[in-house]
Structure formats: C-alpha cells, structure tokens
Length: 531
Image (cartoon, rainbow, N blue to C red; front, top):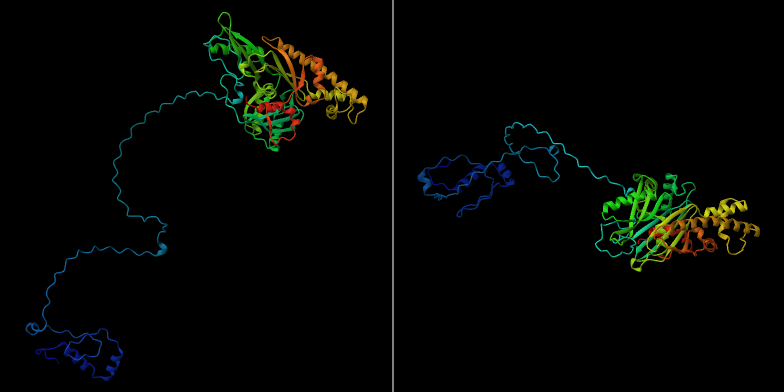
C-alpha cells in the first residue's frame, strides 16, 4: 500500500508496481515476450528500468494542494488564437458507380436555380388583318434561242449628229466579247461535222470530227426525227471526245429569209424599228409572233435634202424551225452559245472581212458550199453577207445521174464520182471506156441544172439596189473536189470559178493529220471563228 501522506515519486510508483506485479514468474515470462506499447524515460537519478507495457493505473484521488504545490510547478497559461468554426459539409450520399450518370467531359450539372416568378399574362390584343401584298408582274424570261437572232450588228442609236457620209461597218461600232474556244457544229443531210477553234490571235484549228447521219433524220434542212438526232449527237460527241459547252450551231433553210433594203426620212429609233419589222413581212411572209427577227445597219448617208438614208440587212427565221434543233441539242447535253446562218460562217471561213477604212469594193464574192443534198449560196461585198439562198442541189444528184447511166445503186456511184475527171478522158479502174464516157455525160447534164440555179440566184441578187458586179465564185464542200468541176461551171456560167481553201484563215494544229480532208468542213470551221 502507498502512503499518500509521504512524498511520492513517479519512479517509486513504477518500480513498486513492477515489483508487485512481477511476483508471479509465469506472468513475468509472458510480459517479456510482449512489446511495450509506450516507452517511458526514467528520471535522471534513478536506475533505468526495463521497458514494460503500462497498464492503466487506478484512478488517483487528487492530492492535497499543500503536498503537490512544492513538487510540480503549474504551467504558464498559453493564449491560443480562437479558430473560426468549421462549416460542416453535409456528407453526400454514396451512390454505386454503376448508378452514376456517365460524363464525357461535360461539366456537372449544378443546383437548379430557383425559377423566376412568372409575370401575369397581359391580355392579347386582337391581330390586325394582314394586308395582301400586291405582286409586281415579273418580266417574262425568254430563252436565249427564242430571242431575236443577233449577228453582232449595231442597231440604230438615234439620229447622227454629223452629216458626213458614213462608211460600212462589218459588225457594228461596239464589238461583242469574243469566246476563246468555240466548237462549230454543222448538221447536214448525210453527216455531222464539228470543228474546234481556239481564238487567241490567229484562229487555230485543234480538232475536226465527222460522222455519218442516218437518212431521213434531216430532209431539205428540216428536222424530221428529233429523237434520232439527239441520240446521234450524244454518240458523236462522246466518240470524238468533243466538249459539250461553247458550241455554235449553224442552220441553213429556205424558211430563213435575208434581205437588204434602204429606209430614209426616219430619225426616231422606235419608228425605225417598227419600219424594219414591217419590212420583215416582205422577206418572209409569216406572222411576226411566229418569227425570229434580227437586223443591222450596213451603211447610212445624208441625201441632198438633209435626211438620213440607211441600208439595212434583215434576217427572218421561223421560230419553230430553230426550236426543234435547240431541243435536240439540249437532250444531247449540248450547251449552245449561239445560232448562226451557215452562209455567214461560210464567208468567215473563206475570206477575212475587209476593214471599213478600205472603202467600197467593186465586185462581190460568191461562195457556194456544195453539200450532200443542198448547197449554200452566199454573196458578200467583202464586209458582210448581202444575199444568201439555199439551193436544192447537191452531190447526191451526181450519184443519181451516174447510177442511172450505169444501172447501179446510188451508193455504189460515190466511189466512181471521186475517180472520174471531167477534163481528162481517163477510165477509172473497174469501168470500161464506154461506162466512163456515159458516167461523165450524166455528170455534165446534172451540172447544167446546177449552173442554171447559180445564174438565177446571181440575177436575183443583182436586181437589188446598190448590188455589185460578180467578181468570182468560190466552191467548197466534198463535191468541190471533183476533178474539173470548177472548169466545167466556169464554162457554163461565164464567171471565174475556183476551189476554195477552208484553212485560209486558220492555223492547223499538230493533231490535224490529214488537212486535205477538211474541205467539207468549211462551214463548221467558220462557225468556230470569232470576228
């Protein structure tokens, strides 16, 4: 027992406790194996005891103040800074991972904001009746192929201020924008022909193509089977790899009228246009709503009384004639940039137009393109086409004449026609001398009818006012290569006749291998040339 009235040291308590508890040797051996839970450092004057596990001591009654006052000094009071009370965060409810919402980088949804109080709805005001919009009448858009034909000529711009005589102009004072690459397309009675021209300085012929056309599709310049033509054009452009854009189509038909006349005493522009439309009935007697009209001023001068006289070129065509060709091209995927008369294209290919400063010419140039069943007749004063006509005569007439004389099919006569000569009594291979003579005589009889057609057209032209004398006749086309044709016609007509060169105005590209076979492509080449 401890006498609490005596001075008690902590080491005595520990040592006594150890001695009291270790009386049992069995317990001592067990305690030696147990590691101490806490190590106590003995005070400096006592013998250090072995580390032991300290069991909780019995509660010690408080000692009297007199006994403890001299032993342990009271610690000085420390002033601790007051800590702010921690805000307790409510523990979130643990949710299993498989019940959590998937998140792919988006921000977690925050607490919903309290909804603002809804304002009381105001009574709706009665809607005013909407005013109906008055639609402005739109201008009717006319397709380009239904507009009036335009050949680059100048229209009247009102009365001229100057009174000096004016010289002729080829295409008007304001030239139209030239196309760099144009494909001329000629649709004949027996074949399709195309020529690609690059207009960069000197026109360059870069590609030519020809393909036979089935009989009956085109008859006399009239399109009889649009579906067959559309199918043929598709195959033609695909087989020869021709571009389907930038294509200019040529037409030639007796249902197209070209006239040159003079008008004087009219200064107002609208009155002049009405007067030209009135004269259109003379060129082609059809209703104006069924016609396509184009005109240009060739020349104008002042008369003795001070009035202005104008010389005008008028072109009138049937609208339905052009519509059928345009629809066939559209079905074939061909985008046309224009439609031109074959006569105008023919003149562009053969000779370059003379400038207005060169003055008037003394003689007209006549160009004739001899086709399969038709021939295009065009007269030029060196600047513009003054007269044109389509003759119902072609190379097929000569084939029929040979077939009749030799009692063969017209298709077999084509090779004989190319081998014959009208100036030399040669006998082609496969024919007897008598057969060659009879075939030659049949050709000459047919040429007499052709010469009469040419003379009739020349006389009709020269009956017009201010017409010129005939200088020469130039022949083009496949039949123009017949040996002795030009000489035979010159003898029959009495006017100089010569074969024309359709390559006179163009530079032949490297891909054109056989330039001699381009003679029948004069119209297609002229359609591609931009002047």
